[in-house]
Amino acid sequence: MRQAWRWYGPHDVVSLDDIRQAGATEVVNALHELKPGTVWTKQGVADRKNLIETSPPGRSQLRWTIVESIPVPDDVKRLGKGAKQSIEGWIASLEAVAANDIRTVCYNFMPVVDWTRTDLDHVLPTGATCLRFDADRFAAFDLFILERPGAEHDYDPAARARAEAVYETFTQADIDYLIHVIASALPGSTTDPLTIPAFRERLKAYAEIDAARLRRHLIEFLEAVTPVADALGVKLTLHPDDPPRSLFGLPRIASTAADYRALFEAVPNAANGMCFCTGSLGVRADNDLPAIAEEFAERIHFVHLRATKREGDGLSFHEADHLDGDVDMVAVIGKLLKEERRRGSQLPFRPDHGHRMLDDLGKQAAPGYSAIGRLKGLAELRGVIRTLETLA
Ligand code: DNO
Image 1 (cartoon, protein in one colour):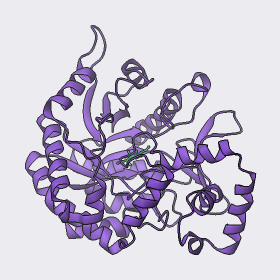
Image 2 (cartoon, rainbow, N blue to C red):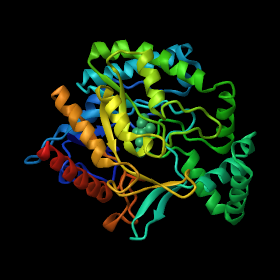
Image 3 (tube, rainbow, N blue to C red):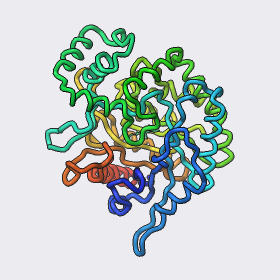
Image 4 (cartoon, helix red, strand yellow):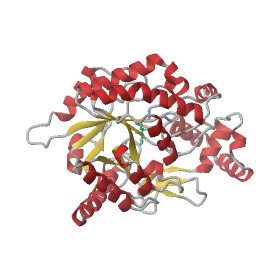
């Protein structure tokens, strides 16, 4: 498998040398500084590519091979093919990427909020910290901070009571923290940062959009972009919802095998692919990850390897060590290596997220994207890959 590493660009506290020292050879990047909907230019992509690929004398070569993500603008999710201009803009960005010889593009179709957590530094028994989703804190935000109309119907009485008890312990600082973590778009998010009033407005705009309609809009988007991607030789990889279930009463349609099956059946173009993210899909106990990897093997063009651990209530989870979450990582990697042998080429993966630990404690790295935790994850994953390859 090809070892890649997500980099947030020139302002990332993790340097290109750190990436080299972790042993990765490919970089996953995006023009993160541009707002969703801004059209990327060929020159803009070329400048970033030069920055990544021009190595100081004596340093090993890094390649920018994967874009994660070209954000899909909000109106595409609400209007599908009706958002003509936004789709044309997305295609122009895709062309700018392909003109720079980057052939893998990741995107997602989560409405209003991208990946969602409630704690960015949950302290583990070792003193390292991890990202966590606490269902009661999330419900407290939804019910009592966002005060979403109708939210009470999404929680049973016991869950509402727990949320209320949690909310009663909150200081203003706790409330501000939760607003920051949930509404202001975590790094890498492809949705707009929102204030509470803007959040309420955005939700209103989705009042009429159920899962069937959102899926139709994604299919219309794919019908427009996949023929172009096919012609450019680019694979588009749809990232799963994180977490893979409805939040804030909004539909999410890339959460299960059935979701992906429907999309591949509707749009069979070769460019219609999947980003296989074990951390996102693995949050659901009813997602059988080795089976999903096997079923969609030929559609997988990018892999995120990370493990989550579900907690007692079945809804809360935290990010575990890469080999020690709920997912059977060895079995998943076994399926991916089988697919590599079938196609005769390697799949790119990145170690996704990592604990904040050792010298990274207290450093300002992007949540989940500190260096040492990912370095540890990559090292463990590389060991599994090497072992399975040797035994194959
Ligand atoms: C977070 C990531 C997301 C992801 C996008 C994909 O760590 O998984 O930022 O990149 O949702 O489009």
